[in-house]
Amino acid sequence: MLYVDGMNGVINHNETIQWLYTLIGSKFRLVVKTALKLLLVFVEYSESNAPLLIQAISAVDTKRGVTPWSNIMEILDEKDGVDTELLVYAMTLVNKMAEAEGLETDLNVHAIEIHRDSQHHL
Image: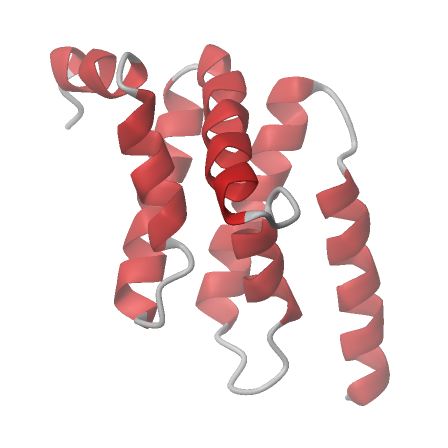
């Protein structure tokens, strides 16, 4: 059950979304999985939340001096010990963001290229 007041608090506090996005870069699988699930709930709650997530991602990755969406790309790029559950959550988040924004992102293109490469390794 979602509490509207709680979600409105998260919507109005972009630092919380930045923190969740940062957790996607954790070395602990359960932390990454939980952060991805929470970001999915956030994006699915309202289409107007997608730009807030983009803003959070840009803020975090700009501070780190890396390419936007780098935490998600690292999950999708992982070749050793592939965790299909994390891949599904990561791609679902990418697709939800693209759907909400009505565009095909560079991240989608990158994910498709990774998928093609993985098919060649099988």
